[in-house]
Image (cartoon, rainbow over all chains, first blue to last red; front, side, top):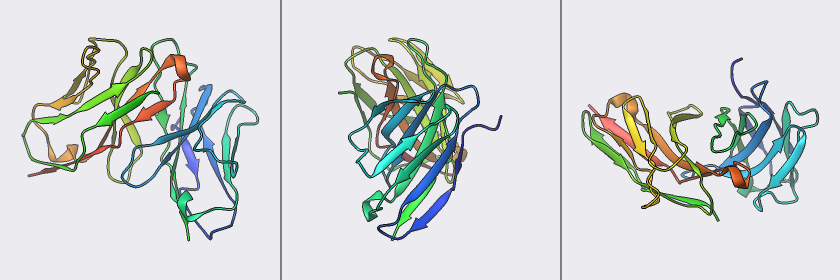
Length: 116
Length: 113
């Protein structure tokens, strides 16, 4: 297993277009998280899945954003009608179903989105 | 809500200097605390962790102690190397609130020979 993978690594799009990113977690990991990182900031939580169920969404996740994990394996994050403010690095992370007091998330390399 | 406040950078040190990066947190429960590192052009990597008060996390010469009384988790290294140049993120996660991570803003470290 080579870790969490994300595709594409870079995406340039024009304002108003839709984009979709994919994340493949570590195979035995039940939980999958999406974060957004803008320049000079730490990653900010967007949403997470436990298996195929989306359990929490941040208020950062506007109605233009949607995430799915249909079979509890890979996940997609779609942004509709992109805006320049959506330009950021989108990070995916996965973890085992957390035991109490401990949770280690493994991060993918990210997808860098540039909206022109 | 939960949050992390991290010392702002950038930090520039000479090789073999002592490093401290301050991190304090606010949490309603009993979080686990982490330091992640991001080397140029690479993804986030876990550097060290501590899951309860007074635990000390350590890795690659870096250390941090979970201090509940001061709500802190400062990162230290006795002698930095050029290869330590990276961005360091303090983070917490709380099992009671879904385990999502709350990250600090990151501290950029440059070590010069």
